[in-house]
Length: 206
Image 1 (cartoon, one colour):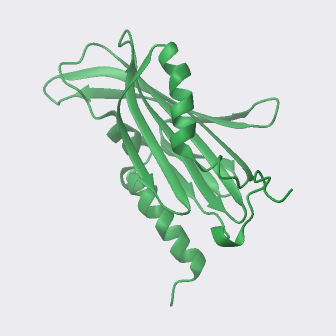
Image 2 (image 1 turned 135 degrees about the vertical axis):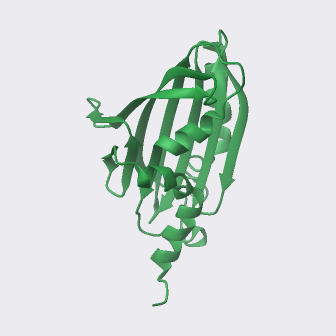
């Protein structure tokens, strides 16, 4: 059977996102929660879903984690918050580099220090993972910014995972823990080609 355009689109998303589902897919304790239609959070741990008064979905996740090595394990936990919203496409809304840069200013004032980043880019899916720690090193974190084009809209997904633990002798790969214990299953209609869309924030010709 030949792949439909939708199938190809979903496979492209899978290359960016669902590489992180391998371990989760085998975990017997996994739980799921739908953020919005077409976007499901999967977690190997405790998963709960709530909504703000404005209707914004929030999925909370936590689980105990052993950091370090088998010979020198360090007990700790990871806590994640995930949100998703859908809105009309705009160039600014799809510009994750600028969005991340603007939010970094306020996070630095709050004592957060980014030490590494993972950036994945395509015409329809953009993702940035920021890895870092608080100034007092009381917490490590992984912040995920994800924008997915669908139809003439953008799905904006944010995942914030924080790690609390005793003193570590090395530097764990905290992003690998996020991939191991959480995932995002995305099944959205394909996006309209950019050359066929008009940016609603573009005032030219008005």
